[in-house]
Amino acid sequence: MSRGDMAKPLLGHGSTEGDPSITPASGRTIGVLGSGDFARSLAIRLVCSGFKVVVGSRNPKRKASLFPSAAEVTFQAEAVKKTDVIFVAVFREHYSTLCDLADVLAGKILVDVSNNTEINHHKESNAEYLASLFPACTVVKGFNVVSAWTLQSGARDGNKQVLICSNSQEAKRTVAEIAQVMGFTPVDMGCMSSACEIENIPLRLLPAWKIPIFLALGLFLCFFTYNLIRQVIHPFIREQKNKFYKIPIEVVNTTLPCVSYVMLSLVYLPGVLAACSQLYYGTKYRRFPDWLDQWLQHRKQIGLLSFFCAALHAVYSLCLPMRRSHRYLLIETAVKQAVEKKMNIWVEEEVWRMEIYISVGIIALGLLSLLAITSLPSIANSLNWREFSFIQSSLGFIALVVSTLHTLTYGWSRAFDENQYKFYLPPTYTLTLLVPCTVIIAKVIFSLPCIRHRLLRIRRGWEKGRYVKFVLPRATGEYSSGETSSNV
Ligand code: NAP
Image 1 (cartoon, rainbow, N blue to C red):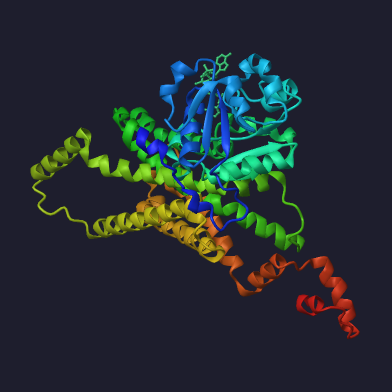
Image 2 (image 1 turned 30 degrees about the horizontal axis):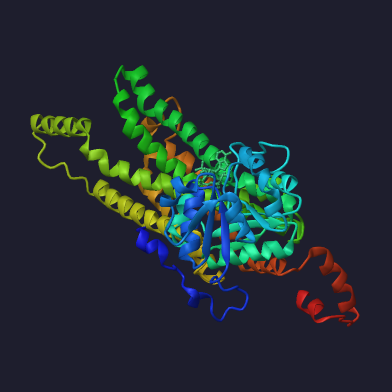
C-alpha cells in the first residue's frame, strides 16, 4: 500500500450510513501505544477506515516516518491524553513500563491485543494482568486473532472475525463498533474470564485436524506396508527379483487411492451408525457415544483429506509413463514380442476395462473436488440448507458409488486369480471395498420405504416410548393433540 493510499479512507463514511448500530468513524480519535509491526498495521487500517489516529511511542521522532502521514506520532503520555480508546500494541513483558502513564490512562478503555508464545503460558491472561496494573481503566481483550498482515491487507483478504471480551458491556460495544467500521466482524466472547481462551486461539495447531490426520497417516502406513509386502517383498523373496525401485512411486500410488477411498467411506459411516442407533432406540434425543459425536464432527476434515489423497493419486498416475523404468519395461516387452513374432497384442477386454476405469476415476475426482470446494466456509455460506445437503450428502454418496466402480473396474477379475494372492494376501483393492460397500448397502437398506419412513419420523421428533403412550388413548378415540395423531 502506498503512502498516498494510506491516507484515503478505505470504507468511506458512506459505508456506515443508514446503519444506526454503527458509530460514524469520523471524529473519533483512537490511540495506539507502541510503534512495532502490529501498531503500524493497525494505524494504517484505522486511518483507511476514517479514524483519527494518535500513536504513542517512546521515540516518536525516529518512528514517525513508519506511519501514514495522517497518523500523529507523539510521546506516549501526549497520545494517551488525546483519546479515550487506546490499543496497547506492546508485549506483556513491557506492560509494567507503562505504569508511569496510570494517571493519564485513568477512566479510559485499553484494548489488549497481545498474544503469548505458549498455550496457558501465564496463570492469568495478559488482559487480566493489564487490568490489574491499571485498575482505573476498562480493559477489553480483542484483535489478537488478527495478524499484522491481515490488518494491512484488509479484512477482504484474511480472517474477518475479531473476538472480543470484557467485563464492561459499554467498552465492549465501543471496541466492537471500531472493529465493524474497520471491516471486521466482532464476536462477543463474554466477560474477561474468556481472555485466556481468546489468547490461546492463535497458538492452537490445527485442533480439528489432529484426529483426521492421524487416521489418514495410520491408514497410509497400513496400506503402504501391505502393498510393499505384495509388490516388493514377495517378488524379492519368492523370485529373487529386485523391485525396490517401485517404492517411491508405484507403491505410494497404489496406497493413496486406498486411503482416499476408505477415508471417503469413513465420512458416511458415522451417519449410518447414527441412523442405526436412532432406529434401535427409536428416538433422536438419546445422546450418541462420545466417539461417534467426535467422528461426526470431523467428517469435513476426513472428506478433505480423502480429496487430498485422490488429487495426489491423480498426479502420480499421470506421471507413471514419465518414469525411466516404465520406458525400459515397455521397450523390453516390445522386443520380446518382436522376437516371438507377435504382431497383434490388442486385448479388447483390457482396453475397455482401462477406458472405463480411468473415466470413472476422473468423474470421482471431479465429484470430490466439488465436495471439497463447497465445504469451504465462503462457498458453504452462499448455499442454502437444501443445496448444501444435496451436494454434501447426495453428491457425496454418488462420489462413493463412482469411486467403488473405479475400484471394481481397476480390480476386475483379479480377486478370483490365484496368482494374485501373494503370501496368501488378497489384492489390496478387495480390502478397501469392505467399509465402502458396507456403507453403500446400509444406505440402500435405509432408503427402503418402511425404514426411510421410520427414520424420517424419528428425525422429526417421534419417539418409540411416546408412540406407545399415544396409541392407548387412540384406542378409546381420545386424541389429546394434533401431534399425537400425526405420530400415530
Ligand atoms: P514489536 O514489533 O516488537 O513492537 C512492540 C512495540 O512495543 C515496540 O515497537 C515499542 O514501541 C513498544 N514498547 C513499549 N514499551 C516497550 C519496552 N519497554 N520495550 C520494548 N518495546 C516497548 O511487536 P508487535 O509485533 O508489533 O506486537 C505488539 C503486540 O501485538 C504484542 O503484544 C503482540 O502479541 C501483539 N500482536 C501482534 C501481532 C502481529 O502480527 N505482529 C498479531 C497479534 C497480536 P516504541 O519503541 O515506539 O515505544
